[in-house]
Length: 201
Image: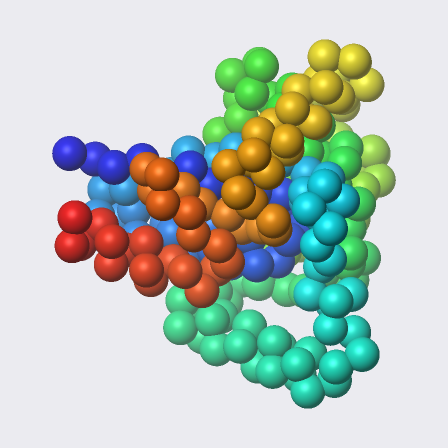
């Protein structure tokens, strides 16, 4: 039986990008069905009282240095040769995540998040700029202008807030967060545990 993994994501998180790329290999090896759920990481932090690592540990230089080393190891282990740290980090992803919600409604969600992940973490684009985001979406074969227009509707705004709250209600406090059945996993470093769980199920 093919198992399903709920993957809660925000395209502005480099760790979420890493996990998304690494899980592609897991899916090929195990047949895992990864279901992507757009949420807003800032909303999760605000609701749970959490902070992004660069903020929480900004005054602990050894911690930051080790985090960077760990990122380098993960990139090497998973051969993520296309990764490039975004020069606009931390990128405001509110518009992009609303667009992902709008794409869900339009039936094009599976096309939007790979394009935006690539734009941020491989092509060094600042997708917080509406014109750049529209261009990225158009190049992915989507109707960028229509999706961006939809981000301003009350329905899409509320849907993103509701999706984010639903993620928190399941126990999330940051991203990437995954659920294999009722089992929660947090962070890119749990990808191997997810694969292990699939192999021993």
